[in-house]
Image 1 (cartoon, rainbow, N blue to C red):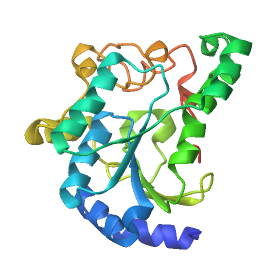
Image 2 (cartoon, rainbow, N blue to C red):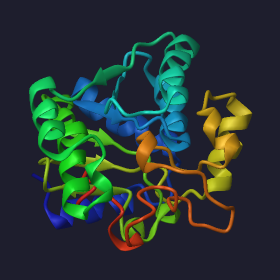
Image 3 (cartoon, helix red, strand yellow):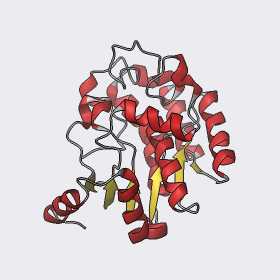
Length: 235
């Protein structure tokens, strides 16, 4: 458990640090008790590249909800081959998922926020809980500019829900900086980004958006922007 004062001190310490400096420090401190939770976004692919360069044995996991785009599954393979690593893939438990679909149907998330959250719970949050076992810190690709729900997040936070340190090394980067890193370092990325998809999640919950839209406008587009989160980043 980190106090507010300790979190404040960490944020002050790393205020001028590069993402690589932040990652190196926490990876050294926590070792295999730290992992990157990757959604395979451009931000998480950037962090994957940075972290593998620091330590090729770093833990990186992703969640397979069973409803991802084919392009996303291809990216998992591409990333493994490019870096000679093995992303840990966590999937929903079969019986709870079957029960949910039997009771609510295959696409109930369009009907209410409650059902959409319930779907995220069985497909994402429960697998995430298993992925977190043994960890004391997790790394995320969150940025302030991604959505209105992320404007107040900090570089280092205490994750009260999961009881561990949460590190957001790219929190102050803008989208242009991320793409510049991707291009310069030839980082594999989801080809859907070239087709108008800015934030990519489950296929039925994601659509391409116009350039004037905010970066997460294509996620759960039928809901109010103020609560377009799946529950992974509750504060």
